[in-house]
Length: 67
Image (cartoon, rainbow, N blue to C red; front, top):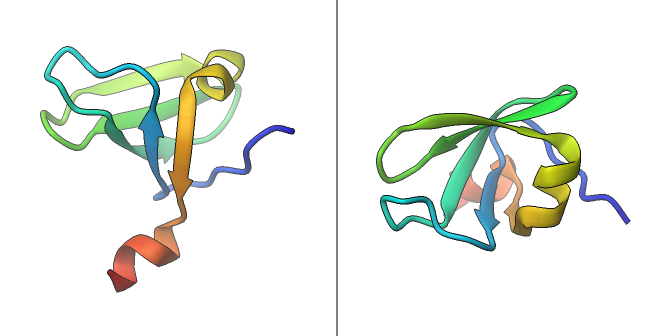
């Protein structure tokens, strides 16, 4: 089952970014998924297949605004 993700969702990936953070925010959806690191602000693009393998948890944007 492929994860449903949309712009603004927070995601946790399985491996840390070199800055040490696991948490990202989705900035773009398409063939590639655009992500922005929540610790250092670096933006990366991952192919959808690689994103699906790396994602550990998705927090929808509506949940992040309320808490």
